Amino acid sequence: METNTTDQSVEGMYSANTQTDPLHQYANVVPPSQPVAAPMYNQQYPATYPINTPVVASNVTSQAYAAGVLGLIVVSTGTLGANLHRVQDGDMSMTDAVANSLAKGAAGGVAAAGATAVAASFTAGGALGLAVTLAVGTGVSYLLNK
Image (cartoon, rainbow, N blue to C red; front, side, top):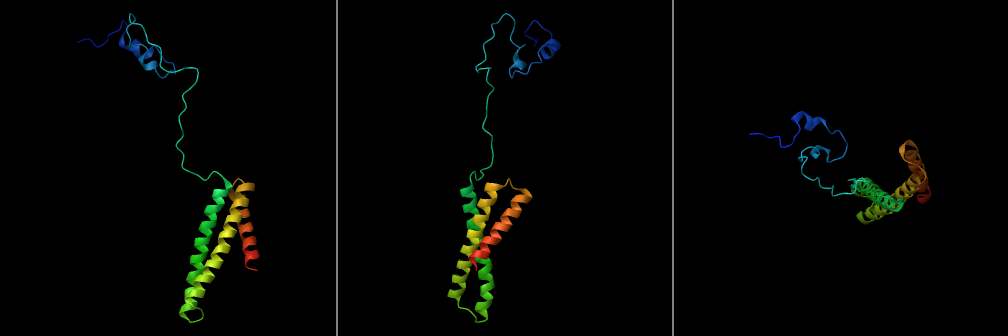
């Protein structure tokens, strides 16, 4: 049974067309006596496809909000852990421990949010961004705990 339906040899089918057109692999398959259909896309403009990128905070406000919430959680839980020792020793009531932890957590959240907003606005990240974050966070915490 003959598998070659064109007037060309098999070697000619595979070596005749080396274009970069996506349909070049089918260029020599159609017999010469048959009309070739036009491609179904406009060849002047290359196809564009959406890039699958992870969801990233695209503006400073959402980055600062996320850092503020994280700062609140981390500082509150760390402070409450330390305050529980004082509650066990009888130096502090549980209500005072929770109130103190939330107050310090709020200060930590504000410091983290401010530091992130400044670093995201004025640096491109890296070591400079880290240095700005640490400096602004420390300064805000100092002012809030004064």
